[in-house]
Amino acid sequence: MNFEDLLNKNVNQDNIGDTICKSGYTKIIRPSTKITNKIKYMMMEFIFVNKSKAHEYVLDHKIALSLGGHPSNEGNLQLITLDEGFRKNKLESKLRCLVCSKIIRLVDAQKAIYQDWKSAYNAYL
Image (cartoon, rainbow, N blue to C red; front, top):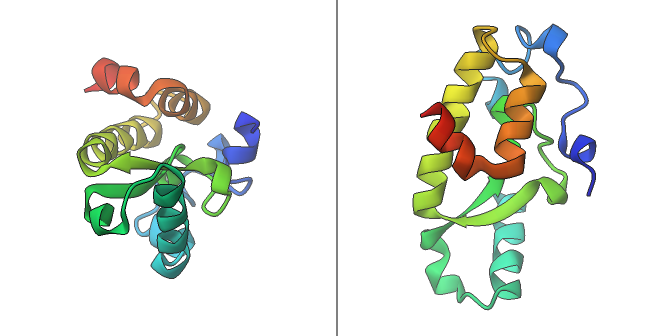
């Protein structure tokens, strides 16, 4: 899957004030849990994790919605542990603040979280 395919085409550096930096933006574009839970269970089955352990995992957008990630492209979705999800959410919030403050460019934040979010966590937090 191509990096650009994982991005929301409606979000770019020029319109961040009307998209990702606008309060409540991700609530508008986030897929319903009916859809995401189905994908989550399919991914769990694929890696042989019992559905009874669903509470230990989250379905995560590789490139966060708050950073212009594609909301429904399954290539932008991954299964991570709940603990990883908490850590990654902190990074997403930090990167969004940096982008919205124009300290870093949107594409740089997107690439940082996509290429290696754990290294980005150590670099930014």
